[in-house]
Length: 231
Image (cartoon, rainbow, N blue to C red):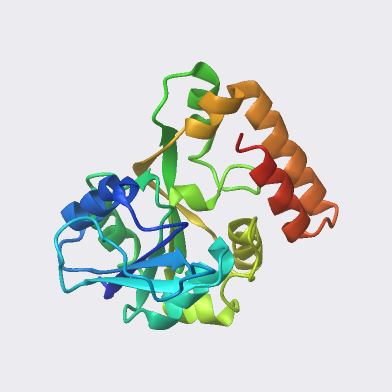
């Protein structure tokens, strides 16, 4: 398998990262992990407490806030031939290493995502998770993890420097050139926003934002609306 770097954008460094990091270390114990936190505005050099053991393969960077800029900063610092972009509330499946090795043993494999489940048993979230086994504009997002060869990532121009839908745009560009592989392993992600706002209401809000994006609305404006829905 090509050498791998895991890149995790996050708003801040804190204990909320521990489940994600533990799963990464469990699946890929010798792999470089780069956590990219949003640059603190007032105190950019203040010390931070990093969760977990101070392993040499785990690094912390600061970058301009927004998943697009943060992911790109992590990619520039990464040493791996294969990049795995993870959300900080997503947990890798146990068989992640074997699935990755199998998928990228083929030289023409350029990009893959895992399937998705939420940490909530609501039936509607279960339906959404079931459809994540298919690749499409409405069923593939960054919370499923994005595995991509560095050369292909660079040819695509990386992520757009957007605070929202940077993952959708990267995958749209990729589909014009290759097939996005869906791995059989299931990524587990947080349903906290759905529990807070209501599952149906949150789904309708997400669908409305995607529709506006497809109609040409500015991602910065859409990000403001999305953040307003955080409660």
